[in-house]
Image 1 (cartoon, protein in one colour):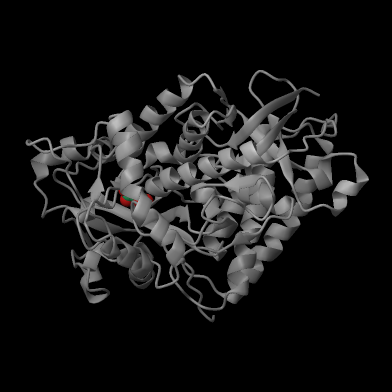
Image 2 (cartoon, rainbow, N blue to C red):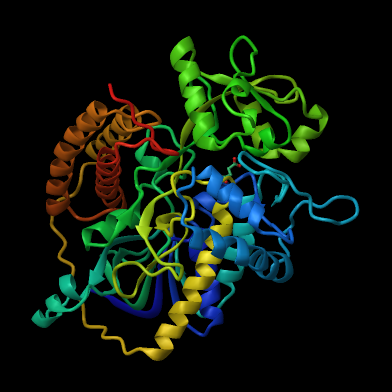
Length: 517
Ligand code: SIN
């Protein structure tokens, strides 16, 4: 087995992982970065709306909006970290250093928009391609940084811990300590071990465990599943946020219709053209996401219709293709001209507010294992995330974690043993079975653990998923590991963890809504 050695192993090349790589390299550390796909294949690249840049003298207003969106459940210390450090992180890295092309007005000032749950305009954007503009600048800089080695098309399989993967029997009695991961790396025919002083999970969320999702293919909670298998503490996994407005077309794929459209005045209406959100919340179509998604779900259950609509009548129609090019082009591909037509929309799984528990320096319950971005849970979002906080959290979390890791690496001794070799079973896995099983996970989650849950539905989901996990474990044991098999194994595990968390929480709050049926 090949063994690679590095200071920091970062699993995930979205904004959190890429920013961490930059900050850590800046601090003098060598970084190995694994991206699931190419350097831009990540959820961050698909983020449309924007990133909060709150330069208000009083950050309390933003803190209040985050807390309010979370239904009072967010961790105040995490909220404080974001509102205190956020603007500086954006200014230093994105505006001054990388000069990301955010939209500006004629006077050269940054244009500010708003989204659901925001009481002020404080979101900067690059048309509706904000994530792409940010990630391409950050990833471009990562790829020009000699201390960072990136492996694209690469997947971590399992974490290495002293208790599980080295041969010293005494290590079983030491605190759980991570020292890297087994991984499938592009260019290596067999799994390799990447041994690292610090391992950081930045694997994004878990949206693809649901049938309908805004997430990139393959985003199935890899970090959560890997951390779980070695005993890491997970938290708040029942709080899966559904984005209220995802394109609906009979044979069309689901894709995000940014909330910034509602920030600029678009209104949700039903088939009869009635703006049903006004009766639900004082902010109407701009209410926090959990409330809007549930209201749509209710509207659809009552009417039997397949979708509701976004009415863009209040916006200057002729400017839409320029301000929202992604939405314009993608809708047009499916026969909807947003300069004229209503946009048919439904909710879809979007963001995991929970994840691997960390402190504010990205430390998990396992020594030398960090987690950042959507994979982590500092409690910033509580039960429901405020729009446009996620890209910002990637930056602030990555910076705090890289700085803390650099301090640790300078101060501590690390024991980095030779890991046990990976043993590859002989059989090949069957792609048809893998595909079918993943579909079954996604359908089960959508039908029984979605926007509205009940104890009975969750019990059904649990039974199906437990049986499926048995099947999957058995061919995982017998077959050569592939990226698809890793994905399926992690998907079923993450799905079970979400169902388990939802079953244990009888109280409806934020993105977790449970009825007694
Ligand atoms: C959107 O543009 O609506 C998504 C932004 C986010 O999830 O924060």
